[in-house]
Image (cartoon, rainbow, N blue to C red; front, side):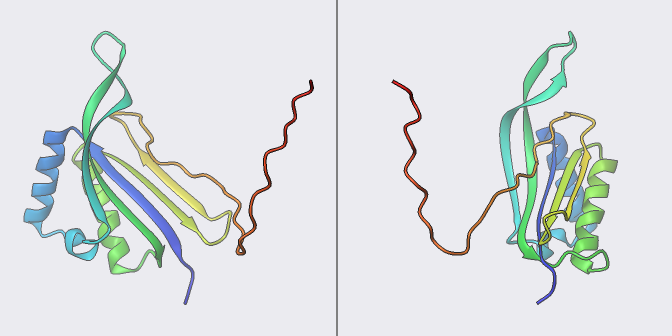
Length: 148
């Protein structure tokens, strides 16, 4: 079966710039849209990103986000799919877009993050450690700890 990863990556920026980037990649024949067809999502949103305007105040700005999300993937540096996605992240950075990448392995300490966010300083991706149990054990009722 092999070692598996959960992978999440974002490419984001100004909606017009994102449209131009996507068109340029498709004209170039980037294989990412075919390779990851079921794992890519594109959304437009208005979010609070830490971007200073001309007078130094923080602003809310519209961005378009291209997201890759995969669970239980084999993610090795020499796999063609991995090379295709990493090439797309580099191309996005060269195009002046922000990118974020998080890969979490089966081992609790195997976490890799790469943030390249010069335009927005947003860091939209993060990790959180949770406790799981393989059998169904109901949580106890909350105790009343108030002293009367």
